[in-house]
Length: 229
Image (tube, rainbow, N blue to C red; front, side):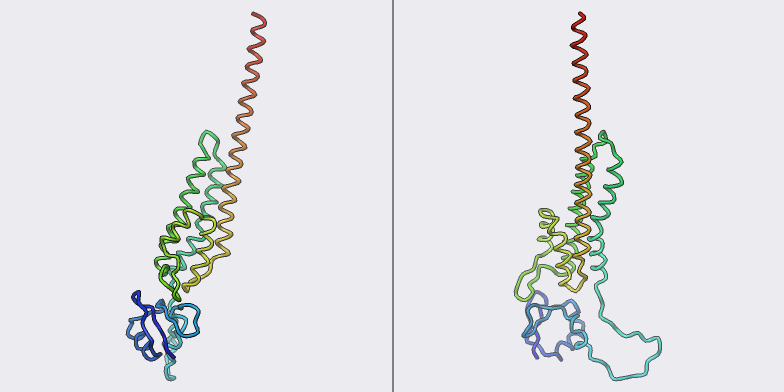
């Protein structure tokens, strides 16, 4: 069976399984290196065929403390994905407990807008950082994928769509799919922002009504005083 590698931005092959095993043992390829063979719809990381790259050794007596070797997972990327997913929830909690306790003289609308803008920029930037770590933007199966810059711009321009879409797309690069968590986080964030903005506008309208009522009473008083002059 013949294999093809996408290595150093170049396609290499055809290669035999023995050649892949030799390159694996020498460290010239890793679990994140992409490979393809006839019948595949897209390029896959070599971590999906780790058992073929590391054939089982002959049975040996081992000490009880021996721990079998397992494929390394990109723990850093998963941790960053969790941070990306939870950041809007943290912002929603901040908005709810901070802005809801503010009065109109403290300009809660500006504070609310500031938190929303910072959250959108921060999540978009973290998406771009992780996309770079995962190798997004490189061709897979002959098709170009969205790269770090693309995800950053999508996050800025259409955050409510790009945010959950990214948390789903990252699962194609051997990390977890956080689509459901991303949808919940995004909806809570947007919902809290809209509720608070609506409440602020209602408070402003109430203040305007009271102010207009006070002005009307003042004008009535002025008219009554003029009658006695």
